[in-house]
Amino acid sequence: MALRQPKEILPAPVQQSSNAVLMIRPCRFYPNPETAADNAFQQEAPTENIATMSAAARKEFDEAVASLRAAGVMVCVVEDTPAPAKPDAVFPNNWISTHHDGRVALYPMYSAARRRERRQDVIDELKKFYRVNKVIDYSASEQEGHCLEGTGSLVLDHVNRIAYVSLSKRAHREPLEKFCADFQYDAVTFTSVGDDGRPIYHTNVVMCVGSEVALVGLDLIVDARERKKVRDRLEASGKTIVELNRDQVANFAGNAIELHNDKEKLLIMSTRAAAILSDKQRAQIERHVRLLALSLPTIELAGGSARCMMATIHLPPLVVEARTKSYPPLGARQSRLDRLAENVQ
Image (cartoon, rainbow, N blue to C red; front, side, top):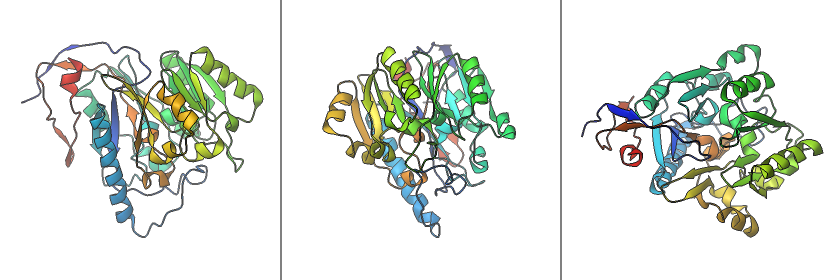
């Protein structure tokens, strides 16, 4: 059945979690040497057989998408393009974010190779199913060496309008101030430091903020006043705090994301991250959300995990007259936003 023209637009309520995500299926995957200098989570991997590594990453990606869809989450899958090479394309949350009022933000990236990931055709694909009324592009800040890598640098509490930001080369104050002014967020800034003494590269490996629960590596915030500030803001906004130790953060327990389906909230993390939680932590989490673990050992070699793979879609959906599960192709592979029509009507 053909997809007809939208007949109306429903406003998107402001919720912390989303029931839809954008994911980019990797083409040529390998740990990016341009990001290794400040990403302690990244692993050295042999590059003599990138084809094998890429195939393994695609298998993990496809299994992750299948698990999310089976759990009732809508997934818009777009293929990475073969050229130019984009080794981190599987992590789209760093270059794009979407918002409840129909705006899309594009972000300044630290690695030159990662700047190639910004794609107008991806935005055009979202426009087929969601209202996009404005695109705000912060990428010009790259010319000044000022970066803010999307919801890697920004951990957003959408309901309480708080942006938690661990300052680093990937999170500079100038574009942060612009974002907060444009989207009306209050920035809570701090510095988190790894065992090697370097600032943690992205906030979203240190903390995850859900509707009712927050996972956070408070011990990595070395300044006691900053640590108290983060704790106080989380508690004041009604979050149950699950404290993560350094080893848990190093194994991506902080790189989680809350999503939801029609019946329940889900906390998505990797199997590596879930395995390192204590029984007490798991019980704290499962009072609020159901854990869903994804196997991502190859993808995690690049220094990111489950949360990094998903750009949450908060845009107002277009209401369509016809129900369909078939959507036009984007490039060589068909991009699907499965079950959209059923879920927005």
